[in-house]
Image (cartoon, rainbow, N blue to C red; front, side):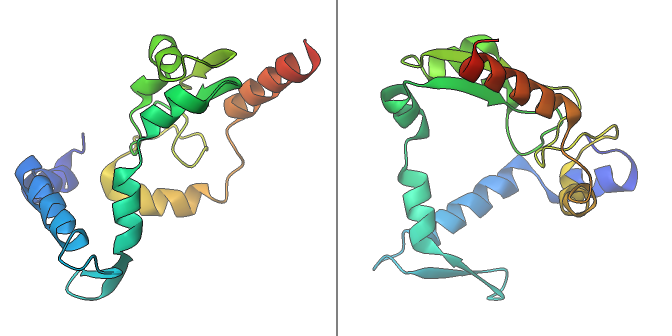
Length: 159
C-alpha cells in the first residue's frame, strides 16, 4: 500500500466503488447496440478496440487450460507483480489449473516483477509506467533465468 501524499491521493481518488462504476461504464460502451468496432475513452482522446474487449472478456482461460494443456508446464509469477495475482502459481492451484498436464512446476520469486526484472524497492500502482521504462533497461531476473534453465534441462535432457 502506498504511503504519504501518493497514498492519500490513491486512497481518495481510487475506491472500489469508483473502479466498479468505471468498469460498468466501459462494458456498457463495449456492448452498446450495434457492437461498435471502437469505443472512446478519456474524453475521446483514446480509442480502444471494442471487438477485442468483447473477445477478451468472453474467452474462458481456465476452461482452455483445463481442457487442452497436456504438455509439461512451468508457471512463474513474481511476488512483486502488481498486475497479476501470484497465488495462482502456488503448487496446488497451478496443478488444479492444468489437471491434464504431464507435469506442473510453479515458482513465485520474491523480487520478480511483471516486467520479469528484479526489484528491491516497493512496487505500486502509481509508478507502474515509470518502473517499466526503468526496468526495461535492466537484465532479466537472474532467479527467473536459473529456474527456466534448470526446468528446460530437466525436461529436454533429463538432468
